[in-house]
Length: 349
Length: 285
Ligand SMILES: Nc1ncnc2c1ncn2[C@@H]1O[C@H](COP(=O)(O)OP(=O)(O)O)[C@@H](O)[C@H]1O
Ligand SMILES: [Mg+2]
Image (cartoon, rainbow over all chains, first blue to last red; front, side, top):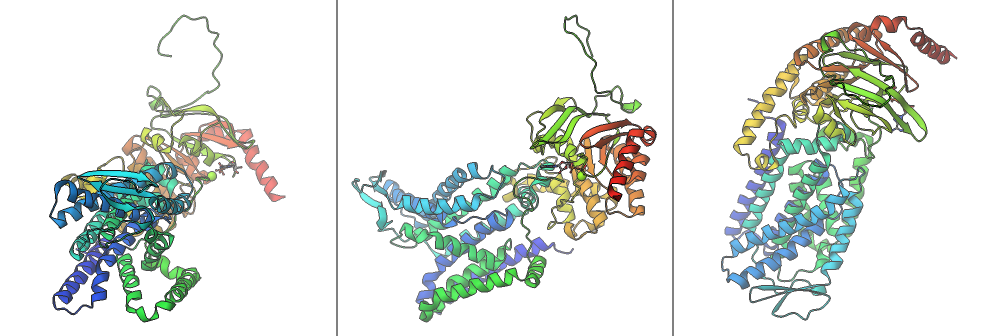
């Protein structure tokens, strides 16, 4: 039996991740991996999950989101609080369970943020999501700068603009999360990537996923066959936010100090660049792009002064490439994606 | 009509003198549009549109370009909300409904400018049409619960069955956007049929087809009506098709119905002849 193209693409995505994991693990146990690269392993996992989840919004659902790092920060901070609270409330020793639960909490909070943004915006016909998510990313960063949260004897205290709280301060306003227990591991990162792929790929190849792609290709046609487009745009957007929140929790629990400034507009754009470079709608492309572009600055450490220059050059090249008619024709054949043809609802002829 | 009751209300003649096929006369009509109208910023695109379609009727909607035919379809499918009048589908008033609800009530359509899900396979296009017919939730889909496998199998079988109406089951895995024009139009019909409609609206189904394909399409439309026992309403410029298969025909000009009747009546109607000839004279100038 001939395998379907989608099945082949899925196998490639899982294959890349599993092979890369096996190689990394054997390099670690052989002591062949540099210290700095080992430090990059968890961030690479995080950015892969970020890129794959953003691809669900941008590539599969066809909506531009410019605030993906906002969901990451919600996940990071709520995950850190949850992990600290679990330690204090139940004296939970098992770091793996604590990390997994913290990731679930991060996902839930990011999902709630996704619903709050999605409900008013995704009901509208036009493409307003880009501007609203852009604002969300900036607002959440500024809000987190003023938030103080402490944990004392299993209770969580919260204050706005005032660090006068009992117990140990977990989130300390502009100083961010301090004294975080670093419980993230590469293995859990790998598991999160597999989970993300499982969710995203299975969703795409199901009734709901087809409905999401139908809304992307033609909203009017999707409605004409009885698909509630708001529901499916929400489904893609919130799923994407939940996964970004889980990645955020993994990221937050990988460092002893995390500030909200880390999750700024540049981070959102960085993830978007992964998605665009890897191919919009192409899941394994996102994985490759996120890995390369996270490792590259590390490998080019000596050139760090020119990093932004290289970045600008790469972006200009991408723009040139994607705007030349010849390359467009090429990508049209290669990329399984097409923007919805009607934004404002208008003519149905 | 069902019950006679004494009342002091003064009764006036109802302006919708409608005709339906004799076989449908004792059945609830699939569509009753009364005094339907819509304005776009002062332009009355459709005005006082009255039409009844019998349960298994093949109806035609014709008229010069810009007469408002597609706008009628957009009204019936609730893409536009009418500024006046009512639309009853299977006896239910559709006031305040949206396109999705109209589809669930039984109205499905094709588009004058083809709107397939071009990057997806032919089969997936039909499966999307089956969205509400063979349902399962997001959770079953992601975690591949038994319901997923059962419903996917059902969708697959049903999709191939529907595609076989036009002998298209062999192209099930082809990309919809890469099909020839005529096949794309046929796929749109299959996708609409997949939603299990009671009224199928076809907007210029033969546009871009060669005479041979048009002949086949005429047979298929009749076969679809017979097999599914549904009503079909079609907009078409090909008079051979319209006069060949449409039982009741409605002629629009400048947003108004200028004639209704059977193919013979329409062909003889002086107003219709004038509308078409008059338009042709204008075009020549
Ligand atoms: N959304 C709209 N806004 C403004 N005018 C419209 C709109 N839709 C249709 N019209 C106008 O209504 C008239 C009828 O159009 P249409 O129904 O497409 O004609 P046709 O009979 O060729 O299908 C045209 O004059 C068209 O410009
Ligand atoms: Mg038209």
